[in-house]
Amino acid sequence: MARTPNTDRRQRGGDDQRNRSPRSDERDEEFLDKLVHINRVAKVVKGGRRFAFAALVVVGDGKGRVGFGTGKAREVPEAIRKATDQAKRTMIKVPLREGRTLHHDTNGHFGAGWVTLRSAPAGTGIISGGPMRAVFETMGVQDVVGKCTGTTNPYNMIKATFDALVNSQAPRQVAARRGKKVGDIVARRDGAAAAGATE
Image (tube, rainbow, N blue to C red; front, side):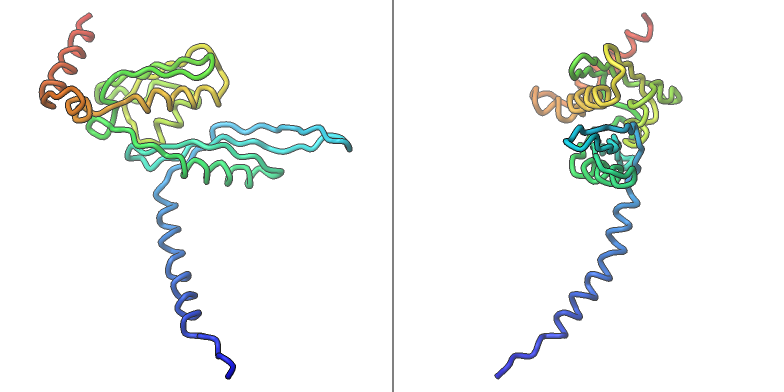
């Protein structure tokens, strides 16, 4: 006896897919993405040169999560889409102080580039330019001072910035590692910041 296809199951699957797509679109809308750099590249083959586009994109949720990705394709929109997808898959979580700045100063480097990030009081704004500003804006940082030396390559600047952000830790994490109270860590941090301001 021939089996009849289960149309109800397939129908339910189709309904689930239709119902699932709006939610996935809403999740995508939660992220902020910025195109940092795009350039044309060429591959030399037997018949000549094949041109393509390479894109560097930064993606964040505005609440401390941020990631970057690169993509290459024959067309610009496809390269940007690939870079955005990669950035969403490689996002990191950075603890923020009061939801606006970093908890402490931190350094990072990649290749010849060195990055210094400093926490700043309210009202300072983002004192940084180029690719670093795109990272802070998508991450949700409102007050920070950043400086990069040794390179102007946007790829190296982004990677050095992420190396510095990975080293950023919240007072709770530092207290747990050192076996101290969170209040002691915060008091020491605030005291050091006040001493630096007076100097």
